[in-house]
Image (cartoon, rainbow, N blue to C red; front, side, top):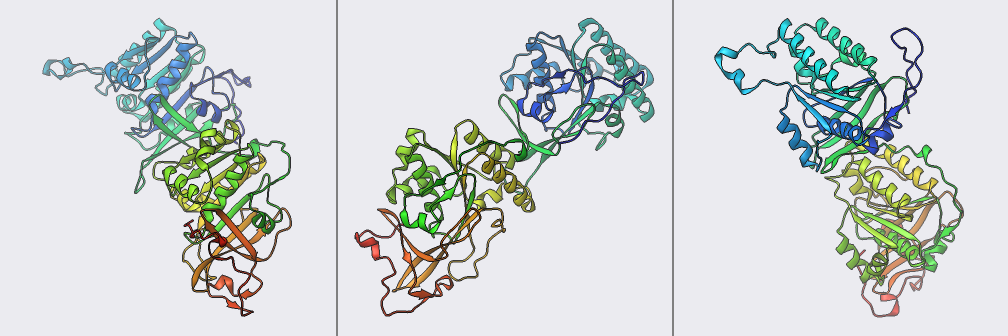
Length: 518
């Protein structure tokens, strides 16, 4: 979070903290810690298509809804184009005064080529006077100028342009009016002249990825006399306006909770974990594809939902129907738990999702829906939603810290490269972030491929150091006794210490049921 900047008024006296004006956007208000300080001039800049007009219109509509006179001055788009933008979001501009200052069709005629938009001293003065006359008539509390690119071209000279912006700032200083200047940066990459003059600068960016939807993010460059949440924050444009997802800061979300254990309902699995998983901790489940990682995570979530707790699963790698069908094959009535409302399943498309939006989904599940168990299946899919892989651990650390402080049991699934052997690789090492780590391995024994389960880390208490066999069938998950009669299990090709292999689970758990895929 950025500390406020000290600002002085025109007389050199220290200014008092002004009233905050809400922008009409909850996410942006959160970043601004209440909104824009009133009666100031702000720069909203970004390339074409980043959402400047949409944010500006919502800012004016918020003022109109509060009974304030508001004015939109357009120097680059027609009244019809602005109205169409509003209509695409389901908005009516009845309470907004639109003042259009663009060349008319008559200017295309040869005899009328000299217009106020020709970059000369006369036209720039006429344009400024026309706008100020409209301001005098309306007496607005909120004004939007769209866009500065036209004013910059009219001024020609950078010095004259700066002086005009300073004059505009001084003109509005005593008029109890908050001004937004929109800049599409078509004539310059970044206007430091206006940045230095404005009380605050909001920067919008649009990033084109190699695959998937474009990503948009917003950053408060400066905000004099007020604190704000620094850094980049993801946002998207949808019908109804701009949705901003403030960056998650775990330190702002602390909550008291009762420390207890979450059990899986499988006695041997709980014994391996020293009784279960502690509230307010995260568990990483590692293993090759098909080893049972998702099934173990689902077992904990289903057990919690069956006891009347709410659980939320975010699925990156498979569809909801496939997940439900597979869970039913393992003996769990997941559909009934979903229908009861105690279990929620949300399919995530990593190509369309930003990390900020995903954090918002998780927070909503915890704070609004009361989820006490959260499953992220899997981190491999979550990585695809990251703009840069090196930031995965930072964002994951913040998310896990937040969930831990809420008393949530978090289960993270991650697939490793390869199928057998002790040298299994992971796309990125996040094991140090998790409080507990469960490791699954395939091994060969008795002419069959089997699964081994062990706990290699648990920060919050005792856990077994043994390796147990795990089997999945129509009856559910079964975990056997410690594999004391074998060594080299984690290599994939163990050797038996005894002639018999009584430590292994009987095929199908003695029920005659076939093994089921994870």
